[in-house]
Structure formats: structure tokens, C-alpha cells
Image (tube, rainbow, N blue to C red):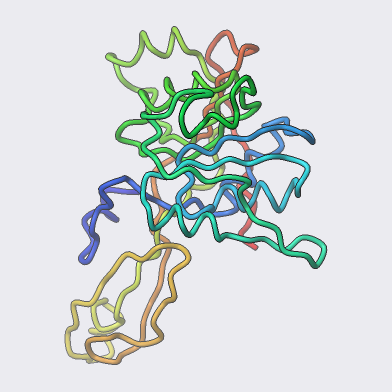
Length: 256
């Protein structure tokens, strides 16, 4: 999320770094994941199931999707998440594990069901403040990891040796993603002042799937919504075939 978005009145940072991924952001990377039937997919920061939902809608029940979520409430929502395919409802996830991902080990404890069965794809939108150790932990669960990262994650003298040791294919989104909706009272804007409205300070960032109020809860004037665009983002893929750093641009589909 942009610095402007973080500074918005009413913005409260999530302690676990939760920012929902818009469906079109996930759809942008699907052609490059190489997913085929019978694959096992690990979503190690699954939230309420936004990425998993797109995967299930695209590939149906031909794949297995396992989610991991540290937050109990969101993990419960992910377990209940359903999609409709050809008129029938199916769970988004085959399994949701409520745990700190760092406390999990391949084939052990809560991951015992997958002992001897490495995941064919690991794909998620991680907490950006800890993405590097998060990526390293993902590498333990399979040979193909894809993470959504801010493009400037590559720009650091300190991280340069790590990138040389772990080259990735960076696929930059053609449109900046939004991770929240900016909700304002018209009376908080220049337009409101031109209309002679009494000043109102209501402004709030809301999750992408939130129910947006039709009128301001403070003064009952009209609500204005805009997307809170982040900086440039890229899907970074690590796999054995990538032996040197690569990057290109991929198209972000329009929202549906």
C-alpha cells in the first residue's frame, strides 16, 4: 500500500500484515504458473482465501489447495470459503491450517498429511515486511515458489547478494494493484467545499470485500470511493530453471 494510503485517517495497520489480493492480480500470474491437474498447491499466507478462490475457479477440483493462515478468524473464514463451478458449490481449500507458517515443517506436525508429498507450487501474497525470510521458508516446501512483491524489493545493497544466490523471474504487473478502498465523505473534499458543504473529516480505508456505506456515518452526505493504488508490484518466481535474474511485464486483466 502506498505511503499516502498508510497515512489516511482511519487506517489501522494489521499486526499480521494482511492485505487482500484482488482477483485480477492473481489472474495475471495464472498463465505463468504452469498448473496442471493433480498438482498440490500451497498458499502459506491465505487470509480469507482470495488467491485460493481464483485458483479453484480456474482449475476446479483437479488440484489440491492447502492454505496456512496465522489469524484464527481469517482461517475460519478460509475454511468456509466456497466457489460455484458448473452450478455446484465446492470448498476453496482442501485443508486450512491455522498456524504461524514459520512453525511448520514439511511432512511434520500439522503438515503430516503431506509427508513425502512436496507441493508442486507455492503461491501467495506475503507480509511485505518479512518477505525475504518468508521466501526462504517457502523454498523448504517445494521447488516452485511465486510471491507477490513490491518491485523495489530488488533495490537494496544489503539484499543484492541474496538475489544473486536466489535469482527469480520478476513479472511486473502492468497496472498498480489496490489493496484497499479509500472511502471519503464528499464534504471532506475540494468538491464538497465548492458545494458549500460543512467540513467533515470522515475518511477510511476499507478492505476490498467490505460493504461500502451509501452515506457518511458522521453527516449523512454522499460517499466517494477511490482505489488506494500501491506502487509497482511483481510476481517473483523461484524455480530450478531460473538461474539468473529475469524480468518482464505481464498484463493485469480488468476487474470482473
